[in-house]
Image (cartoon, rainbow, N blue to C red):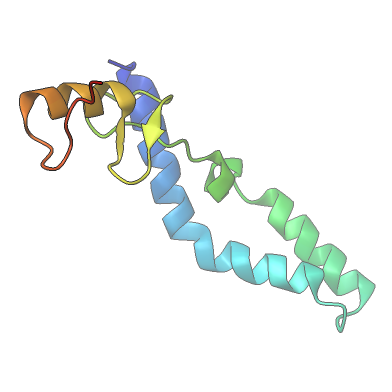
Length: 101
């Protein structure tokens, strides 16, 4: 089980990203728009750099929904490889069976 503080911090980052997504997207578009003057683009970059760092989507870490484990994460299921194995053995994931040959 991951530390509770790490899981809570990641949830706060997700909320910050959702809250500031539109503003950040508008500032990024303005900073890349070559039709604007250099001063306007630099102002957009300055405003973007003043935004909270945790409001950037690249700071979100994929974590297991059950244990909070950050590694071995499966996007399709939203859980880590360890939980996939345990739940498949217990029969909670239909269609998944232990392979043997």
